[in-house]
Image (cartoon, rainbow, N blue to C red; front, top):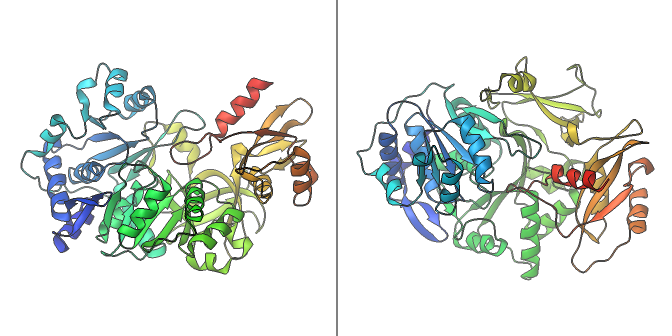
Length: 500
């Protein structure tokens, strides 16, 4: 079992077809990508290695990933927005044999790794091309449990942990995606607007398996108008977008007079809460092109999904959920003793499937905490209804306990976001001597809007219990986010603690 076989099969069927694009310019056919990956495999050698990739989205990402897999090695994709010193900490843990970095990031990485600077290879330069001048290697056979992708958590709540994803994990993830989420073929395209180190990159195997072209925006990253242009230039476009990216895309389309690109086929969203109010606006703007996924790096993108048909129903109870268990995945909601809770009651979400990681890299305690009796304890709080639809409440660590009552920030955020003057909001708990914690809402106003705290209080009291409403509002121009679009609640909490 080797993920490289997905590329090998596609290159055999459509060798001359356009495979990799930078914007609208084709840079590789499937045969060329296949050849480059095998040449890299030959340069990496016969022993399994770990190679790290520290780069913005770029066409070379694909040859690096498939070249590593052809060699029986594992990739360690790194968030390009990390500070080089943070990357150095991960490198000390993962011990990659090579670190491939973009021209913009390589100098800082060499400075942060003075004793390993010779292992830092700048993508696109002569030292990089030297990996591709030898003869193509034969793909290496690998065991299903061989490490394929070492995914380091985003580090929003502390030191990153490396989730070990095996060949079996990623093959199961790919099969589940093709079974549930999308019907992909060679007439389709994947636009890498989200980071290839995480949300977008994890879908590469499924798209490559079906011969769908890989499109990297030029310049790389997510710019809404560029994304819309690419959806007009390429056929059958699908993309993974974080909820904040979906909102920016909608606003851009509305500003362009209700633009709906002809090639937009699917937007898969996840990685953070998509609020019902915003989802309805996005559905009105683009039609039913949406599928939601819920997963974690520890079970990549594959715990539950909210189907296209569920979006078409426009039922608020469904749109507020994250859907049903994915094919091949079992999902439960349990109490603190691991016992199943009745429908409607909130507890910790746990899951079991072939997609669940093998454990955390060199972290037996973290592994033992997360994996128990074959189940992944996600740390997320949620409830199941009678039909098996899962509704997320919050991360267990994000629950605000005020006066002995549990308050789930997402419920408060949902209420506030129905106010037309509120563009974005994030709710956290602040330590309080009397109540233990009190609810604080960080609010970004809609452009040109004005609203007073008293008005938001009254708005909340019409929708949620009095004890859940915020005790304090903090006005922000923007919420701090990582490169995946997740709000950095840790940063907001630190801001509050510093103000006490």
